[in-house]
Length: 225
Image (tube, one colour):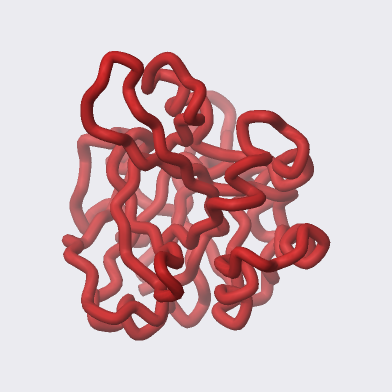
């Protein structure tokens, strides 16, 4: 699964990497948690646009927002059929901006957090789905999203059996294009190459979503710096 991640890359670099027409209005994030606003990219009127969305998909038929906390991830193997996700998979796909994510390794009675990044430390995109939800009693429309997961690669499997789907930059257009066929889209939902990634242990301060500082991503072993 994916339950905590980061986005601290400078905004000018993010704009170039994601092909945005302007710099996104973002502060560095070191400990992004479910139900918080997250940075996404989608196509509107033929152009890529930056949007902040609530993390945790809220289907249009939901009675309230609470369902979103249980839908922070969507399994790649079932999104084309599962009622909660199939409409969004068909019509509302997005990129979720990130540059690292956390997993926890269980050791006896403790859990050691690890930070997982690309070896070149570049940003990347999680494959995401998004939805619009209108409160039954009226009020502001909520846009929400979920991160698609797949089986873990060799690196992430040391910590968890699942990992977020990470899309290569050259696949962004295919994922965002409304005319992409289902077979081609499903073909993107595979484990990211382990040889392009690395993981290192970090402080347990990341265990609390209330900790939102650079300390969260500092290696315990300084050889990783």
